[in-house]
Image 1 (cartoon, helix red, strand yellow):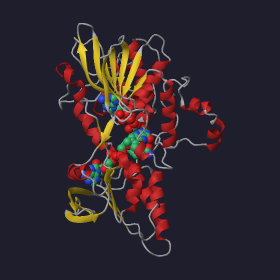
Image 2 (cartoon, helix red, strand yellow; image 1 turned 30 degrees about the vertical axis):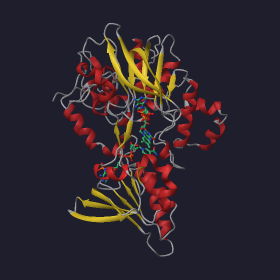
Image 3 (cartoon, protein in one colour; image 1 turned 90 degrees about the horizontal axis):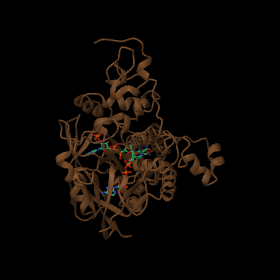
Image 4 (cartoon, helix red, strand yellow; image 1 turned 90 degrees about the vertical axis):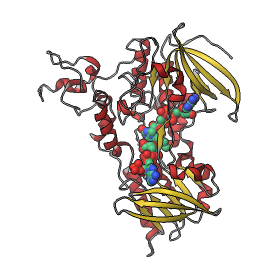
Length: 474
Ligand SMILES: Cc1cc2nc3c(=O)[nH]c(=O)nc-3n(C[C@H](O)[C@H](O)[C@H](O)COP(=O)(O)OP(=O)(O)OC[C@H]3O[C@@H](n4cnc5c(N)ncnc54)[C@H](O)[C@@H]3O)c2cc1C
Ligand SMILES: NC(=O)c1ccc[n+]([C@@H]2O[C@H](COP(=O)([O-])OP(=O)(O)OC[C@H]3O[C@@H](n4cnc5c(N)ncnc54)[C@H](OP(=O)(O)O)[C@@H]3O)[C@@H](O)[C@H]2O)c1
């Protein structure tokens, strides 16, 4: 068991969310911090770095720029460091290849001395006597084997443990003993050659992952002999909302408005807003159609079935080479059986549960009516007063902060908000207004309007509402 001096801030997990926090913290004088990550090095969704796939946000949504364009860990500085600024400038690309974003993040991760890779955090606890959090970790060897355990101490925590692939219940037994390839899209590239060799392939799910996997398979199967099924429970192969005003849902103004809404209203909204974060980007839909069209040149229809509105009820193995899926079509009320030789489950991700990490804090945690953690506007967990330190969450707050929680365009702003809170100073000056849309009729999306027309309380920064001179009583 090793011990160190207590840090001001300790981070758990190093995905883009905590990497952004580490990059913005790096330039802050007097702040001591360390981040722990179970993987041996940074890697961003490696199983889905399909050639040609791009980020769904402009390059300005890097780890730091939207909070501090002068920070040395910006994407533009990464290009400069690699002497690629001129090629980038001439390429006129706003949406970088996903592989380039991964490479950029790896460059940042190699430059930050506060990052500890190969460290799995097992538990955190609150030591009231010392006024510190204890962080218990296991140091892992190159093959993931446990090498040693240790404990660090910190005044504040930043938990950014991200999401894990979701495998629907009926498919779990098949995925656990995969004689026939039954894989999640998160592992697609590791299994691509095996999948392409299968006589028939089924892709399940029509988010961006399902669309990218289907397109890649289609491009590599011979016209007329594609033998591909693409089925999804979503009622349509739907486009992602990407209009300029629609994208204002991914601004600090909307986050603030959403946070101030009642819990039930927030839950209804997240369910209704699925086309803001699930669904498929327009270009991928166009590319799929183009590819299907190309496969039909010469007269025949491609040997492909695309059916929305279908869910997998049960599934089973047939011998050692096939899988059968029992399907339900919701609108028709029909059932059918599909025999296939390989399955890609592009069935999405779920937030990694915080409970195993926070078990020792459980009696001190505040919960909402549905039993979920509460998170204030500065991303702090609700904790009993006896805990004088703060636990910040990054990308575990969709229920309190809305659809922007996992979005890369908001990571820098969230990190800067957290650092201002940890230091108790305005180390990063954040914009008072970030959207042309005025969300809601009351200032600050829920704060009280003062006689002078300003906004009081948590929502005071939503400057857009201040200009709306007309007051409406409802
Ligand atoms: C394929 C894919 C593409 C995406 N593309 C975009 C996009 O273009 N634009 C966009 O806005 N959003 C995108 N997203 C959504 C989101 O931005 C990403 O999922 C992003 O990776 C989230 O970052 P994160 O840091 O919260 O979590 P993650 O990237 O999941 O990182 C969490 C890290 O925590 C580590 N960890 C977990 N538990 C522990 C523990 N106990 N101890 C130590 N380490 C631990 C994990 O190993 C992991 O490395 C995409 C999501 C996916 C799945
Ligand atoms: N290029 C990129 O930047 C890129 C690439 C990949 C992913 N992403 C992002 O990563 C996030 C996750 O995307 P994702 O595509 O992995 O997941 P997703 O958007 O959550 O989509 C999951 C899909 O699986 C379907 N599904 C789930 N269970 C099912 C079942 N039992 N039977 C049939 N269908 C089922 C869902 O249907 P329902 O709608 O009914 O739930 C949905 O169509 C998104 O924000 C996405 O934008 C980005």
